[in-house]
Amino acid sequence: MSENVYIIGVGMIRFAKLPGRTMKSMTGESVEDALKDCSLSKGDLEAAWFSNSGWGQSEYQHCIRGQVALSTHGIDKIPITNVENACAGGSSAFHNAWLSVKAGVYNVTLAVGTEKMYFDKPPVVRSGGIPGMGAMSGFIAGTDVEDTLKMIDQLKKQIEEGNKQAAKEKVKDTKEGGEKPKKKDHSIFMDFYAMGARAHMKRYGTTQRQIAAIAAKNHNNSTMNPLAQYTFPQTIEQVMNDYVVAYPLTRAMCAPTGDGSAAAIVCSEQFLNDNPSLKDRAILVRASVLRSGSRQPFNGIGIASNIAYKQAGLGPDDIDVAEVHDATAYAELHITEGLGFCPEGQGGPFAESGATALDGKVAVNPSGGLLARGHPIGASGLAQMYELVTQLRREAGERQVRDAKIALAHNGGGNLGPGEAAMCIHIFEKI
Image (cartoon, rainbow, N blue to C red):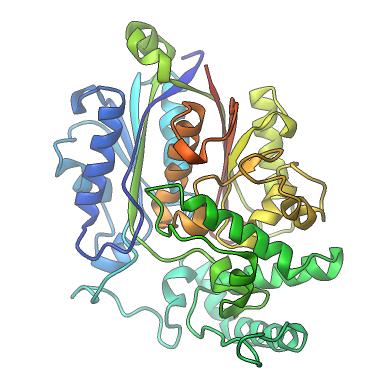
């Protein structure tokens, strides 16, 4: 058993809509970058975990995805395990790579996540999805499909009624003099987040402007991240005046569709001691937690983060920088409360005060987060780790968080009952 486990290499390609790139080519680039980052060769890798959610649906590569993607680049013969855990897939792959080293089975392992979500034209073998569901077909795979299809008409009706009620309350577009146009075709998860946001607003007095402040912060952070999908600034007013997806969420408050790949290499303490040249940039994994959701209401974020804090011997006040799963701006608000960064119900004022800015109490999503860095599902968790490793090494340039020593990554995936189906929390420290 390894006393400590370390990240010694990370790699990531720029997240974007990349019609000319393939799953294989993106995987190869991120892994090669991770190997170069720690001056290792492919032959040093003893096992690998590969995260992906949609390759089967888009191009029929339902099985052996990791073997196909990695063997193309000469990584074969070693154990390769395929991981699918919806949006938490990348972090789940990392958790297993960490776990195998922690258990003493391997000394050096790889976690890589790759996703292709954008096509300039549908591939020949791409499935048509569920009739009548449009863009929601793929995202429903992150729920209990059997149950969701049974209740889809009821669910649609509930969403429509909620949006109609919200339309009576929402602010008119000052530019157009009428309601902001609503995007008709979007992920069903945006409706779930919107319902959660409206409930939070009603219960705690949270405002749309406070949610917009989170989105503006993340978009502005992304202007300093050359690997982000979006690199343009946004004011709070611009965020609020974007078209409504599902009130109170505007387009600028929702994560985009895109492609990408990210990778991390972890090692045992013995391997690090045998290779002292790696120590200066090695990052200690203080905690790695994977938990599943429930069909019954419970505080999944609070439970998972408390386990991680206990494992690390730390608390919320010790975290200097965090990357959290902001599939929407409201999600970041909800997560900062769940992680204990602020009291429940105070996520809106906490963000609006600047407490989550780069120079705030705890810098949240300095990369731009899912909202602006991008959200290629199977790669997002590992992209969070790329950013946090970069921050802890003091290599983040203009977006560098001052004196960052302890970092936290929160990555949720799918939906089961009232909450996430999978939840990963990781805590890192620069040694």
